[in-house]
Image: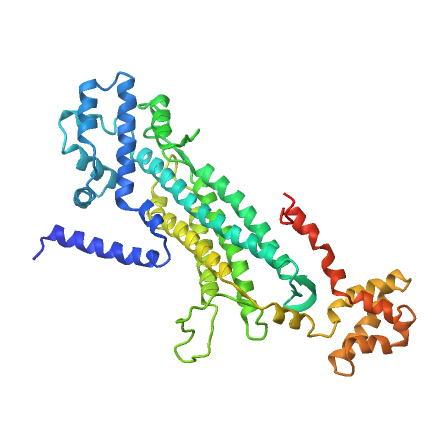
Length: 456
């Protein structure tokens, strides 16, 4: 039978695996490694060694002690650190003891002048920076796919919809170009959030550098590729972390916007575009005919997690005085989850769009479903240009549409049969107003503005 301590560790490991199991389903392997326990402890050790190295250069730590520390403190021991934490109930102290118990008197120089948050926040900054870079990589791949679709379907006509109702003609590429523009803004936001979060602090118990100099801080942070927080308390201010989490939530909003559109386009009544469906895939346990947009729905669900995680980041901003640790327990979950979910959802949407099946014929058929009513504004404007009162012209075009809705005539027939319309427009002018290319000629404005016209 296991001793009490062994049972406690076993229960803790099982609980951790249960919690992580929720994350792992939607996490990328590279992020799992970045957030792994071993890498965290390796970063903590790197911070401690860099600090001792700077203290040695400043003449504080004797050369012999520095050489022994450098030779001895080469590896971390996560198992031993967890054992000690069961007793100490303090993860940084447990880590330090797991290192220094292998040393002699020279171990006293580890953590000299530092506080736990110096180690925790600085290591967290390196982890968040690297994890954010993974999300940026997935976003870059998604943007490339979206850019390809925008070019490929630039001239593929479809109906534009407002309130879910047929409005005027657009092209599928034009729709995708709107996604491209928003994703570019997500790139800018994510890059800024990564820069904002890439700061550490080696400033001591309340951030005053009373017992650790700015030179030591600069050396440690330079060794990790980080910048110093210019005004920490004991911790790095949590507005930085809130900015990252809210940025991920906005990215999630973009992903969901696109996913919801794919879900609408895949509806049976629309059937214009479909997410990929593998040869052996099954859509329903009960109905073999079903082809459900499960990947797009998954993206929508994950976006909800990101919005919830953003709230945690905002809640963590207000700490007591120079700091408390009310943020700490939440951050042990939220950073890994939010970045893991964001990366996974971005990759999933990239897979959806990369394998998207577009039915151009169905798009054209849906566009023509109302018999030309989508050209109502062009007819209205044509009458106004000829001198008609706007409200009078509006009622004439609307009246023809109502007769078409009631199956009394086609829209074009109703227009030509209305003598009042004939006072303003000839049959040829009606046909020109209902010409598809007139409505699509202006999309080049958007393509040029986004650099999608090939001229950049």
